Amino acid sequence: MDRSERLRLEGKKDEMVALNKKIISISKREGFEKEEALAYVNLSFIYRTVGNYKLCQYYLELAGKIAVHVKDNFLYTKLYHEYGEMNYAIGLTYRALDYNSKAIYYGKKLNQRGWLLGNIYEKRAEFILSKNSDSAFIYYHKGFDVDPSAFNSSLIGYYHLQQTKNLDSASFYINKAILLLKRKTTGHPNVEWCTLTMHNCFSNKKITPKHYSFMRNLCRSYKGQNG
Image 1 (cartoon, helix red, strand yellow):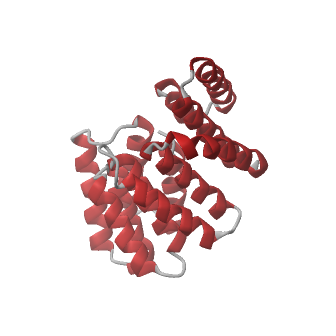
Image 2: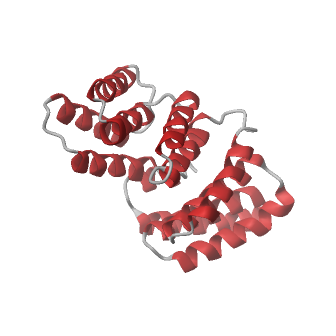
Image 3: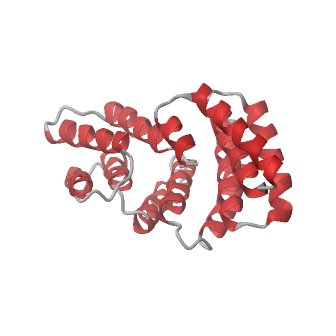
């Protein structure tokens, strides 16, 4: 899936669709059911990001049929995570949280779970932020605990900027993000660029919550969930 990830980061959706359909064709021929299902999840992610929820649902259902008998925790985690994202996107937050809980359950079973489980925690924080900001704060920290990346540190900084209005705490976590970048603990160059830009704006006191929100969402679009 490395090439699929690279195309996603570059925003080449048409190429990513073509690649995953090719993966599906090869997987069917060779009997690689897990790889076939993961490609369906990737396609679901692509169509969700462009607002085609009908196709998003269609590919999730195909992946789900395979997941029933493949019984793989990584596949379960990715599948339920994407189901959560889709339901949140169409306004069904209660269902999104239910799927997110399932993704967390299976994500905890993974041996190498940091980046994916961290993203799932971060998304749960986003789902509940408007109604329960204190719980959202806990999940932002859970995300950072399992995936101490510059991106997740910057999200905590953003939380303080928006919710607690504590500029000292916001600055602390943005500066921590920069230290993490220097140690190269984050994986994607585009995420590093976003985080660095946020830090520079914040340090120069030229940033507003609206600007920070834009940069955060840009980082998230690069980071995505189907890495």
